Amino acid sequence: MLIQNLGFLLCVNLLLTGSAYLFLFKVRKLIGFQLGMNISNLAGGFFAIVTGIILIYQFPLHFVPITMITTVIGMVVGALFGGLFDYQTLLTGMINGLMMGVMAPMVGAASQNNLIFLVFIELVFICSLFLLLFSAKRT
Image (cartoon, rainbow, N blue to C red; front, side, top):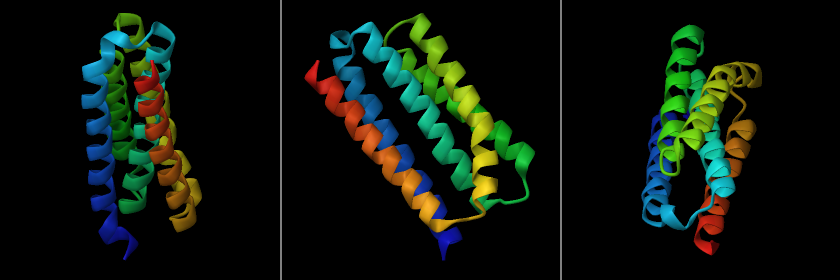
């Protein structure tokens, strides 16, 4: 049951992150340097963590390919969100996505397909995205 819904959960996360990117793209000129740095760190790092945990739950014995995929995904998302602001923020988002992408499959493997942990990580991810959008809207 859990394995069948993981692909759907990954698509929902991608849709939420894409929607947040589109919103931030519209208001990027109003966002300061410090908030932009925090946005790129949160988006790249958290998307890498959530993606790595979901993928390791779905493919439990494929550590190396999932680590490589999650690292690239984290770097790309961090660079995309950081690229909204400036090159320093792009680099910071990319590096944070890299670090979280490397760590995410290890965290997922250590949690041993625990549903409560996955729900907790998803709730924190969604709440963080809403906080990100709320703080960007208030600037």
